[in-house]
Image 1 (tube, rainbow, N blue to C red):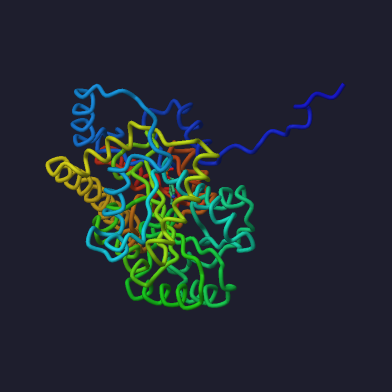
Image 2 (cartoon, rainbow, N blue to C red):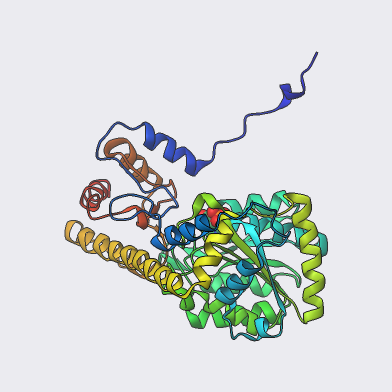
Length: 399
Ligand code: PLP
């Protein structure tokens, strides 16, 4: 008799986690993993931030019971996140038109946003950048949407194909859901300029598209406020607006799964109805979010001394990545003077679309144990003062 699982095919391996598996198995002592999406410090370690350690010490001291959180999460967390994302003095916060729900990382925020949208905009289609974070498409498809892509990356300039992007926005039907990276585009590192954002906001709001901003790297580009500027400009332009944000990177809290979904509505009363329905989505998915990470972030954001410490530590991560971008370009220039790598300095966040071809990435892996994504994406935050010369040598040899 046929078994239930007889017809279950093996699912394809996650391409990025596959790189790490191969890296872990590699015996070369000089091996470097640039395929990751994680910030490492100059010693090649994932940092435990001092502000997190201090917040955790305070929480441990309290020895509070582990009751359930409300469906929408810890109130102090939601408030702190909302003020961080929109600015405490913003009209949407003051007028209580924004609602914020604690979520299981940025991924969980995208997922509850997608499920909510499927209920209330069931016929809309979703548009993501080409390319985008590899989970965006799968996530919205699994929520039941047709997912399309709009032009984004231009390999010729290693920047944004802005004319192509704007043209696509201008021809989408009203009610289309447009996923935009608020800052530090993953995987390319190519962001829009302020002037380009202005035009995007005009077209999106003018044509009645539904913006969904994904902000997974606030503070990794130009600073906390500078990186949040696009969210604030969209909020000012009026709702509806969806914003997913994540503290995985900015607090180095990957495994604690701390993120949030914020939605901007047209009025306080509308926001209350939206929140009530979003809570139903959460309730039927996982009931309520986990306690620990939300408490750590809420404590750090709301305690002035810890807040200042976090801003310092985040700035140090941002500056280190910038220094690695500068060093990579300077060292490559010295070895390969006939090629221009200045785009690496212009790119923002943890990643760079390096322009390395699939064949070059394969040679880096097979001959030098330097692991990058097949698309040429490298994690600049995995470079450090000890491995950069080895990486530059290897890249120069495969170019
Ligand atoms: N969105 C983007 C653009 C990302 O790069 C990531 C993580 O890599 C996420 C969302 C997911 O964040 P989290 O790990 O908090 O779920």
